[in-house]
Amino acid sequence: MTKAASESHNGKPGPLSTAPVFHIDPESFAADPYPALKEMQAECPIARVPELGATLFLRRDDIFAQEKRIDVFSSDQPKGLMTRLMGQNMMRKDGEDHAVERHATFPAFSPRTVRDHWQAAFEAAATALLDRLAPLGEADLVDDFARPLAGEALRVITGLASMSAAEIDSTSQAMIDGIANYTGDPEVEARCRAATALIDEHVRAAIPKKREAHDMSLISVQLQAGLPEEAIAANVKLAISGGQNEPRDVIAGTAWALLAHPEQRAMIEAGAATWQQAFEEYARWISPIGMSPRRVARKAEVGGVRFEPEELVFFMFSAANRDPAHFTDPEIFDITRDTSPSIAFGAGPHFCAGAAASRTLIADVALPMLFARLPGLRLAGDPADVRFHGWAFRGPLGVPVAWDA
Image (cartoon, rainbow, N blue to C red; front, side):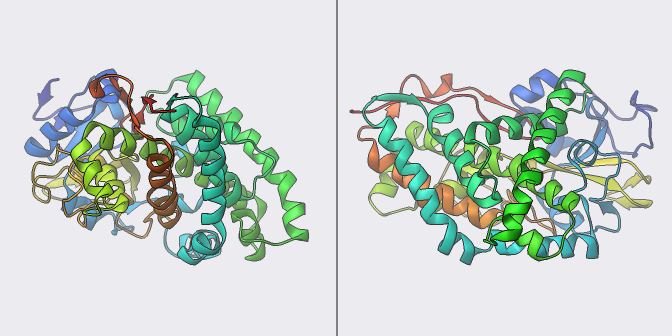
């Protein structure tokens, strides 16, 4: 990688900040963004990256403060990838517009709804998957457990019973690939558009049924709140895009981390630590959602860097969650650490609406049930052989395991 103190143009149209320029190799960054993020954070914590066409915030306190300044760093991005490819969901709205839709969707995601309605469904899905896996003695935790479990959970929460768990996962992956497609690959965009069209079709089919019989699903509560079909579909796509990959990646990733650190797994089994601690630490250590984009709404100066309207900014949660100002030895997985400074779920008004559902699915259901049901669970190979991918969204590509069948 090479870094320059200044550069007149980044090769992309649009206004530019005055931040120092840092160059990346996109392939290396996707394979492992953390070395570059660490270097940027130490040398130029607000950095302009031409290959991404954006200025990146990398320090935790800067992100924590600036994410709340929606008058400067707006989520409303009419030309952004998410809006263009998925429709304008509540994550891409600010102020009252955002508040109205967040309030409308809250009943589907509230801690009480998760406890009273969704947890039992999560447990039933996990039980069915583990019943099938237990006699086999080996599996891939990504493909055979985490992926279908996250999909089954979303079928229930969204109200899209007509979609299979596999369809939920494939459309989610196509969408997150599409909204992270800052290099403009046309094939990636085409797959994303096909995925959003499929979800729209299923939402349209579900709406008449939910009008007749209300429940606590995301489609139903939005109908009850009077949101238009366009908004309902956009928010369902938002839930699928983030609500599939994050649990999928964290279930498999946390299991891998505990199997690679048996002394920390033993702490949980001895009651000296909790599954919740393991979940929170993994989400800090390898942030499943690595960044959140913003549009500069008006001229501003932050940390000596001048920003112009319409510039693209990325708040890098992955870098923030390894900020040495808040975390000792941030590159080490340690379930006993204080993770309260972590902003894995965001820090401002767009704090993840599905956080309660995610914590329950992963820490209360998936992880304890997985380790309890599969005796002698172990990695089928060297922990270092497990490959991870992605910088905007990051997770393991596969976690082969074995157990005593």
